Image (tube, rainbow, N blue to C red; front, side, top):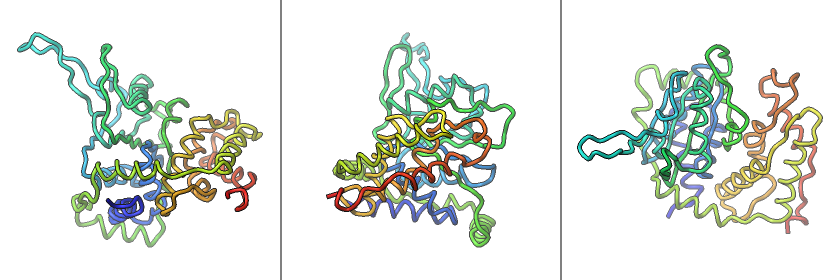
Length: 316
């Protein structure tokens, strides 16, 4: 049975063959997959959001489906619907695209709030309820949603309750000059995605999850995570800070980071590595700051510098 580090490295290397110059984003995406969380990818058109999601899905020997969100889409288009079968004279449930291992929800902010809410139960409860009947999701289920921050017409911003369901919010950003040249070389003559083959299985990801569960957290690290969460609530620039759900998500992701580093315990550095990605999007800032892109990330970095880190003596 491969270790968490081996599985993570295999997936990251496979994605890196297509997504150039984005090692940090690729790494965080793999962390989210192994943690069992969902990702919100945000950036300008053409930055590689959908390609990253497709490459991750192609790297795993499981099922994946893609939904192009539109304003006329209904919740049943995602979850499924009961249809009347003339042969049996009974209603039969036809499962929607959400019944898969990896679901790509492209341009999620183009769907109406009603349709966005259709994903809510799936993401949080890992089940779908239709006409009083409940259908469980796959054992490994991940939503990778993308959105374009520059569009203002025909879009419906995600409500706070929906954003809070995403383990991480990641930004692709433009690549540097050398990475852009590599992207041109990779994509100019062929579809790079066709060259991607699965490097891990759903069973391996489930086994990795069991290994991650064995990672321990000391009282000092629990206290450090609580201090970070509380600091987001008392900061003068924050209207609404991070909830307990955000703190739990931070610790779960930190356990995955520790396992990738081949440790059986979490260090404060593990928390600091993913704190901005896990917590920043959960804060609601004052109006003057909301217009600034990445303002929440910058604020979270400031909080990380201010909150005291447990010493080695405290971790023993």
